[in-house]
Length: 109
Image: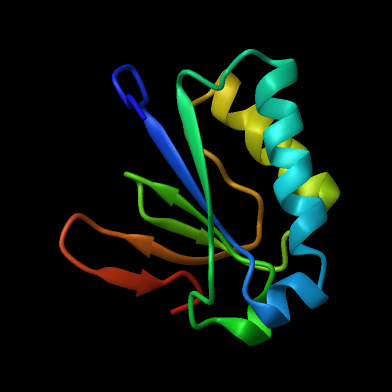
């Protein structure tokens, strides 16, 4: 796989709990939106196993920004991709963690 030209990477949790809570729909929605908007060469996706935040799942992690989005669903997934296309930064109101340049911080704390 050649990642030349890729600027963002979405890690989509498909661990047991996230899958039970709709992770497959989240994965399909994100990948479908990336295809519809012709962003597959700019934004790469990877289905992961458990990311360790089961009670907040489905989880999607945006890199290199380091933002963790919780309780993702079809609508939030569509909004995520749309905002990435338009603005490059995303605020969904469901941020769990962010990276301040040195460490991860809890978005609520």
